Length: 113
Image (spheres, rainbow, N blue to C red):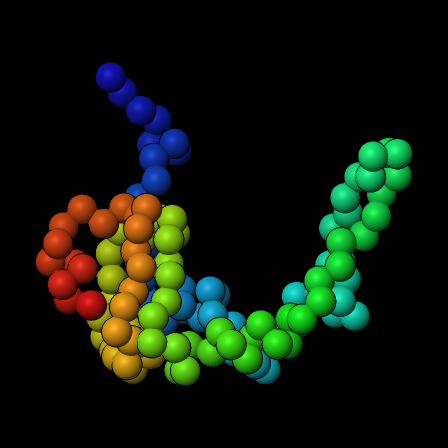
C-alpha cells in the first residue's frame, strides 16, 4: 500500500529547545494572564460560554524547573532522534527520561542519552 508524504510523521529531534517547550522558565510569559486563558471558552449545560480559568500557574512553574528535576516525561512528542550535544548541558543531571509513545526505533539513540 502507499501513503501520501504529507500524511507521514517523520518526528522531531529531542534537543534543548524541545525540553524548553515542555519545562518553561520562570521568566517566560504567562500562559493565562490574570488567571484566565485568552480566547478559550467552555460551553455550559445551559448553552452559554464561560471563560476557562487557570489558577496556580506560578506555583506549577516553580515545581517544573528543568534544572531542579531528577526525572522528566516527554511522552508522545513524536521524538525520532536526539541531539546529544544540545542536551548535554540541559539534561546531564537527570536520572530518568520517560520517552514512551515516541518514534524512536533504534536503541542506540536512547542509549546516547
